[in-house]
Amino acid sequence: GLYLGCPKDHGGNTARRHGETVSDMTIGVVGLGSIGQRHIRLLRQQFGWDVRIIGFRHRETSVYDLSVWPERRDFCQVWHVHPCYKIPAHALDDYDLSALIIATPTSKHVEWLIPAARRTIPILVEKPVVGNLSEIDRATLETLKMHPHIQIGYQGEFDLLLHIVKKFIPVIGTVMAFQCVFREELSRIHPWEKNWKDGYAARSDLGGGVLN
Image (cartoon, rainbow, N blue to C red; front, side, top):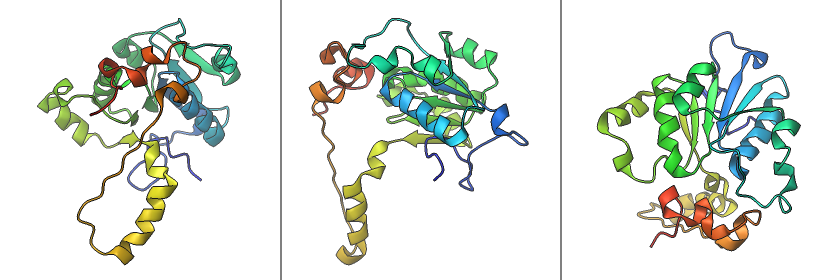
């Protein structure tokens, strides 16, 4: 099937500029943690080795235990990713991107999302878009609403249980309310982190943390 992580046009096709072939495409991936790396592997499966992938990173030092996650050490070399450490505005000006995937901690989304949206680059941003609505003013919100190619990535929509429940809705009848809670034990979901308490998922200032 078509790679669901790549922005699409309203017809359901992968969003490409007019006349653009796969070999012409340059896709940026912001954040090379576990989610960013998964997007890159899926891009390679979908488009092969012809598409150019730029990996935008915030730091060169690793917060991961490479003895637990050794494949991260040579990831860019193995998957043919060109690393870049420039700030968003400079990076987006230097590369003529066909699409941008934002897979950073939530607190870093806006600094990439807004300049990319203003350049009308097709965008896939991991959920949630922002951690707090105060991060986006009304004018910027309108810019995002008018953008023709923005999608929000959320792996929960593929949860088997949700699809089973959906099949029963015609039998149940009109659903007035539905509540679903996803929980993870933080000490287990990222075993490669040197200290899971310092990781994104455990820190509310980065967009993670426990919600009460």
